[in-house]
Image 1 (cartoon, one colour):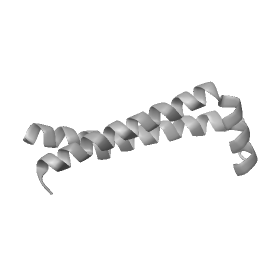
Image 2 (cartoon, one colour):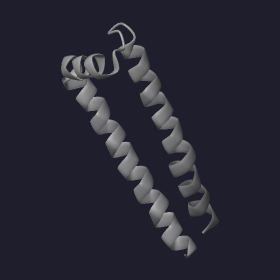
Image 3 (cartoon, helix red, strand yellow):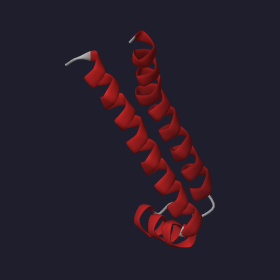
Length: 80
């Protein structure tokens, strides 16, 4: 695997994951009641706790994308 191929992989990895994060966030924004009712019914988590859990999920997912996608991409980009 060449460095150019690895750089392209991390670029696409970051782009796809940020797109997924954006779609998830928009789904939560538009269909909040539906998503809350599904999670409340399947996981039996009280509705009052779900906004905090969603915020934690989005924050954690964003940090993972930054750590494992964007940072390696930027490092490889500046090395090449």
